[in-house]
Every structure is written in C-alpha cells, then in structure tokens.
Length: 127
Image (cartoon, rainbow, N blue to C red; front, side):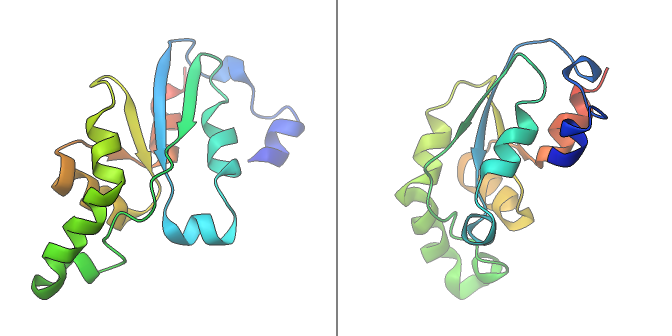
C-alpha cells in the first residue's frame, strides 16, 4: 500500500474527512515480523483519523490456545494484564483495530468491544 500511496494511486481525497479516533492492537506475529508502522501508515491515510498504537502486549489468544477449555482462564488473565484495561479505558466512539482474527475474538470476549481489521476500517472510510 505504501508504494501505491507514493505513486499517488491512493490519495487522502479518496476517503472521508470525518474525524475518527483509532487505537491499534498489534498481533504478536505482526509486531515480531514487520512492526506496526505499515498498519499505522495505512490508517492515517484519511486526513482526520487520529491513530494510536496501543502498547498492549499479547491478547492471550495465541491462535487456538484461548479457545481450548483448559487454557481459557489463563488466556483471559493474559488479556487482562495490559490489553483489556486499555481498551476498556477508551472512549466508546474510538475504533479498536486488530489485524489478527484471534485477537479480535479475544477482545470481544474480554471487553465486549468489537474490533476491526485495518482493511475494514479503510473500506468503510472510502467515499
């Protein structure tokens, strides 16, 4: 996407100018391999989006780990360590973003907040 932005194939004018506050939780694999800069850059394309990466650690799901009955409790404890309290302390109109499918499941189970894949947020922002 960054190459397409540089080529001017993706412009801020393609997106809403509505103001949004966005908090990103990074999937552990994403943070380890490429970092959060690509997701952050992608979500700042709409000019009035304020994007913050949550210093959140692990959500506790780790693939199917948290879905397994014998791991559920520890999975929730891991989420409660950092991520869940930070999400609960965000304003209700703040958009929560998580690229990992398992992270999104864990977030809704642990906080009752829906989180979205970054691509979904951009799709909704298109004019």
